[in-house]
Amino acid sequence: MKIINIQNNRDQGIHEAIEVLRNGGLIVYPTETCYGLGGDVTNPVALKKIMEYKKLRGSKPISIAVSSIEMAKEYVEINEMAINLYSNYLPGPITVISKSKGVLVPPVVSIQGAVGVRYPAYPFTLELIEKFGKPITATSANMSYKATPYSIDQLIKDLPKKSLDLIDLFLDAGDLPKNQPSTVLDTTLNELSVLRQGKIRFEDALIKNKKISEIQSRSVEETIAFGKDFAKKYLSPDVPCVVALSGELGAGKTQFAKGIAQSLGVKEIVNSPTYTIINEYPYTEKNGTERILAHMDTWRLAEGELENSGLVEHLEKGDVVLIEWADKFFQEIEALCDNMNIPMFKVVIKYISLEERSIEIYE
Image (cartoon, rainbow, N blue to C red; front, side):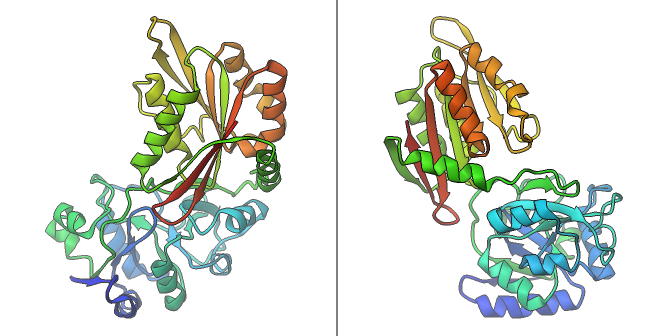
């Protein structure tokens, strides 16, 4: 086992990591979400070591990490839906599921013949993969039953000796931000709608609106606190409204929503509603009235499905509704709010750096 501080020894880290990978060894490397476990995806010896390391993973496949869409195309089918993601949202914290071209084998290929592909937004790792010349595995470096690894020191403490002995090289970039794991999106059916047109309309509308608040958040905690402060100033728990959230995957839309929920008095943990479309969170007003905070995500909605999504029903009940990816259906949402005389706040969250976000709020 060897540890290289890549903040001070970047070139050495890349050189030695490539040697380890070429020899069928395993590395631990940084990404924008956590430390990952890397091995040559084409080397059966390396793949066997990874499965021995992860132990309780069962039949769940191992994702791969690439340095470009061109590299991905060598191993998986890239359809229109995947091109949209690679063009508009990658590199970033997304795992794109695509059909395998038959070059790779399990455990990086699922029993359905699909491969999860990561294109990480971490410059060191992109350079490493590019110079290695082919993908490496992209599974988190923790044991299957341990916490997500954000520091090498903590990871080493958590690992039993048998697992530790399987790692040839740790590439230490210091403590990583405690970002959420990557979002997994299945493109094998080529069904995801193109999002950019709605985003343009959303951003054009902001020109006509008044900016009421703006900050630069430097952490998840600051984003949550800003959402809480916004709700305290502008939202009434008994008055229906829409908070339309726009921002790339992993930008912090759900964290902002958590702050709003805390301000309203929601006791449950707020999670992304991507796969459920709408999550409902009960809370109680000071006068004892029971209400619902509706947290919605339009990502998986196809054209024409917004009307039957449950949005109208929540607004008719007088609920506060938070909508992630509101830019996808912006015209429809705006028209609905106008017709029902319901106020809509627009929240735009943008990346500044790995840790920092710009958050603007318009009314």
